View 1 (cartoon, one colour):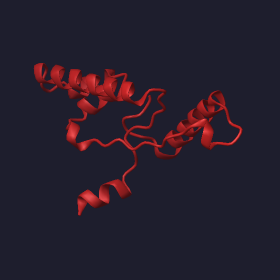
View 2 (cartoon, one colour):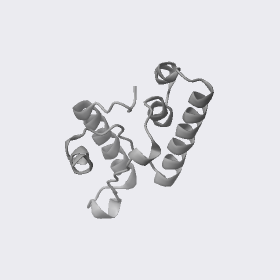
View 3 (cartoon, helix red, strand yellow):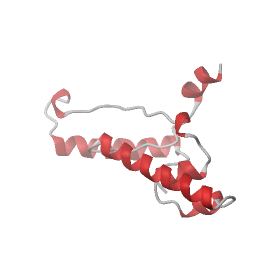
View 4 (cartoon, one colour):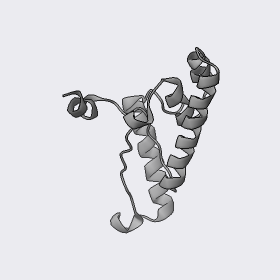
Length: 112
């Protein structure tokens, strides 16, 4: 039941905009792995890592999350589906939407 309830009732942990989603996900994974590795050498320092972490991957590692617990949900955008909106305007709309979603949901592992 929890598997079905969590995506429906949970706020997002992170909201972001990326030009290259594969690159962004790779950076998050690399940072997460670095955080997990650092914590394995520094047990009991999760709070210290969480305080210093400047990116999602490190913050997720500090929370003790397993990679298998994380999901990525994507809203794809393209200028072709937006009428007269060009790529620059679309990027501005995406950043404004990101800001608004941060204000509404306050993702726990989002920007600080």
